[in-house]
Image (cartoon, rainbow, N blue to C red; front, side, top):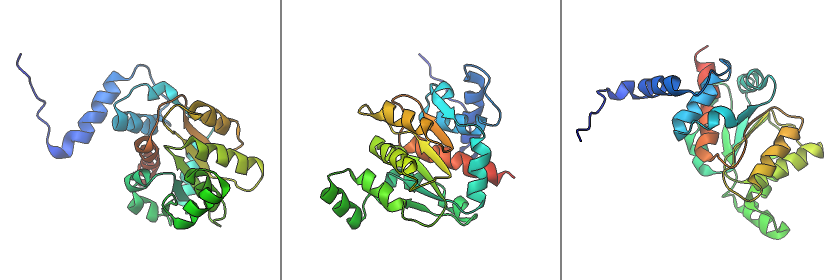
Length: 210
């Protein structure tokens, strides 16, 4: 069997990828959400996200406004942190944080019998800055965020809830969709740090086109 490769220059690869995604979408999608959905599909090569991604009402507009006003992003993995376009975020005064490897987080988790993700969210709640949470790995982080919101100790500008896995993953996402905060959630078991970073970048690139 002869294998034929597409002739695409390095500069055209991403553009061609999005053309393929557009041609293979299972159904039309909301134009205001399309940049996020298509970038997640581009990152994962998984068209299930066309239907799995859930958006609270007006979330894109609220998220873009928060970024423009200097919101910072807190992630639950250094992988997600490394994947977020920090230069684009810095143009609006924001920074990306991941506290998972911080010694005080490790000590707090051990002392309180929790995960590092829980201790990280507790540390983030003490920050006096507008915050976007981008969670791609730890459902315990989402559960803690829900608890902090219910206790009026935290009011995030946005929660991106896309942890991947099996134990309490589905439930933690459903909790966030019941919290009174803007959210972008990948319903079900799918997700990951790459998806969390992709959603952040999609929002940043939407601002970059303005």
